[in-house]
Length: 421
Image: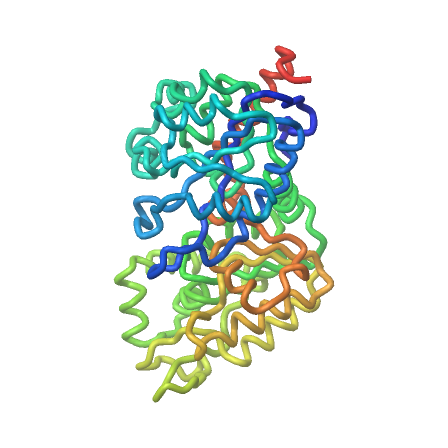
């Protein structure tokens, strides 16, 4: 378990506190309104606690990025949602760290909060900046965001595990300058994933699906070699790659689809995993496609197929559901099929219901997985719903996350210098 200071250990009364949360939410492409409030709801306990402690709270967050520009919008609705949930007014200023934002922070009274403008309005907070400029945290103290806000705040709090893989100023630079603590969500996320990674009850089963195959392959080797996972149930595109690695032909249309997206490069890795862990990797027994608008299923023995396959079939669902029922630990990342289309929702709906009904400890994560679970099951029946996607995958892959590194460094410094009680 990582070592971080908790907000419970700090007196924030009448102090200016900068809180970094991740409330980046799915947006309806037409209305530009929030369609899933999971991350907003998960941020509430930390915000509420800081306000109860008398903090003068400035909240920073992002929405969208260069990779999903259509979601790069104002955070005004986010502030409204926070206000509704908290029962107190959370102000909003459509300025990230300029004169208007600074003025709002200076005028805060104890117990008041303001949400500042979308961090991704700043070039230094975009993924493209991170990927090409590659600053170290100590170099980020000279960025516009940090030199604008650091002089007018007393403390920094981070509660944004979903962005923990981002090496951005808002995530890792304020720790260089200010007494730092972690919010409740950050502790909860790390604890849930650490339990999955380091102390799972066996049998431990991973369900890996969805379209982001790099996520699945990012953790597969680690959880197999470390014996974290006794079984990996592959589905979605991950399952299709496994079938290709076994020598099955999916059909020209589907294979062209995979090749056009560069996903065929994972076949080589899949072959090596199947060779080294043949009894622990499950791949689909049948797949679903549409014909004349109706769902049809095909056994893998009857492949290739001219139609595109978009879901696992009934035999696979039954096989996977039985393994899930017997599991003591369950982790899910990625839906088994294209559940947004009612024709192909069966795999996702049935597998998620099996997970919700099992007595094993269950964790789900990733935006699509959580959205699907919200649609089909009572989330209270899932032991932990992780807000993260990329950060979660990297953590389970055994990689060091920039945020965790920065928080641990700040803890060591603050403990040595007695900057926090």
